[in-house]
Amino acid sequence: MSIEENLNDIEENLNEKKVVLVAVSKTKPVEDIQSAYDAGIRDFGENKVQEFMDKEPVLPKDIRWHLIGHLQRNKVKYIVGKIYLIHSLDSIRLLNELEKHYKSEKLIANTLIQINIGREENKTGIYVENLENLIEACETCTSVKVKGLMAVIPQGDEKSCRHYFKKMKSIFDELKKRKFNNISMDILSMGMTHDYKIAVEEGSTLVRIGEGIFGKRNYNK
Image (tube, rainbow, N blue to C red; front, side, top):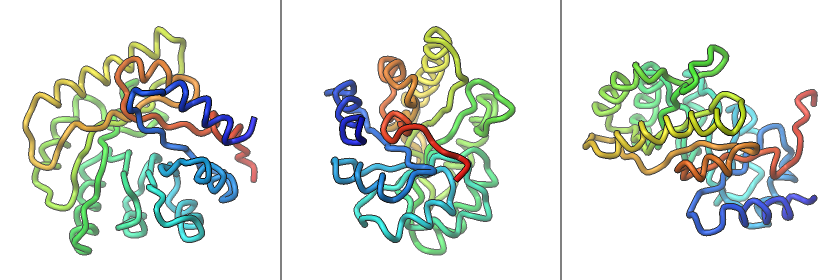
């Protein structure tokens, strides 16, 4: 199926649930991104800063770019003022780097705290027990705003997916009851191509879909 047909199918599944669809365009050529843009998509997700920097200048200026991969501290300076939402705030050290660079440009970094909900060693994200320390640090910032939470859950069956999505929703709901400086729980970013329908049922407000829109990725290019 074409990119447009894939998008129509996904948007039909999301229907009126007011869930934001981010088209994950990592490894995909600008032509594919343009096709999705022409079909009405404005939110695109990239994993690597360098790949984002290559694509951003040649694509429409009203695209809302989401950085969904691990953000290295030495790459922060390249994205200031160019990224709509950073999904992968996962340490106080990264927070401090964002604060420094965004403050110097008098801009605001909108972020999500990434939680490693499955405690997987091969994935980034903060462990739940370290969340409060990061929240306290975020409250002292002036140029970083936290807009919610993000997770990449362990691969598994439907029961396993629901378990992790419910855990994330529970943390999100608990934080939503509290009052913070610079922190609001507006966005719960969870769910990808193979599990987004379950994620939406469990309370996701934003899904990140790549292969379901663009087809299989070729990492050997």
